[in-house]
Length: 354
Image 1 (cartoon, one colour):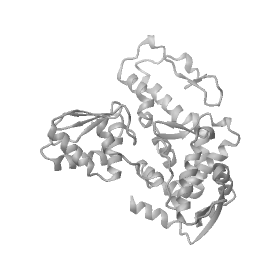
Image 2 (cartoon, rainbow, N blue to C red):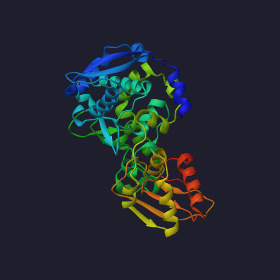
Image 3 (cartoon, one colour):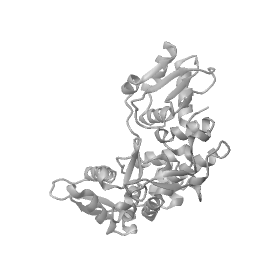
Image 4 (cartoon, rainbow, N blue to C red):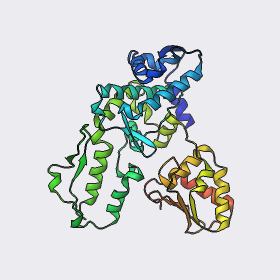
């Protein structure tokens, strides 16, 4: 990833700085206006030098603080721009109730791209599907957060009964209305029942609407701002995990907290090797492990389950919906660590890893 990052930065040689002046108490509006006043070409060529009005201080530390604080401001509930999905964010489908909301999404796109160009980090994380939109990758139901997708996974794994009363429609209030409305996923969808034969189509339509269709204007506005600074071709050299690290850096994983919420069904020796290995992981690998087990970069109160299964020459497997990791009976700590790192760095992604 470092080589890719260096290649990207080589496209933006920056030799001068551009001062922006921000009121801390009105940071979102001021930042929106300051970036909006500057052309994309200027934002590409000049590093931002941030000054908070009425405060002493200067230097790169203020720039880092500004990126962190303004990124927190864009996801505050009263801003109406983004909605939380687990520990991540994606555009709020009801943002249309905020005047000029699309111009703010364009601003956020510029902000995210400028953070990359200036080697700064945002203090928020977007959903996997949103990162895929930035990269121009296909989005599927496999990209939904486990907390949101459990009902869809259950539907795929169980037989559809007529008594469920499912149709190709969903309740929706994405246009900002307080009352729910019925949205047809296909023409006349409320009159088309979900059956065992078409349930995969139903799941795909639900995911497409939730992750793309209901927020497409917001996504497009964000991408307009982002691609003004960093082209789609250039950013697409990264994968989803790399883009998340590039924009937000690795989150912290407290291994002691993880141990507190862990339920263990394995031999003492294997468990000791497991925790010894995890304690020695770098920050990035701790995050990879947590996402491998739970699909999230934050520790959930529901905890994790460490259980046994498989032969010593197999990789660990994980089931994110239940927060379960299955460890084979390895013959040494070194072997466990090698297999675990291979699984979390190169393993398949989804609801189960097999």
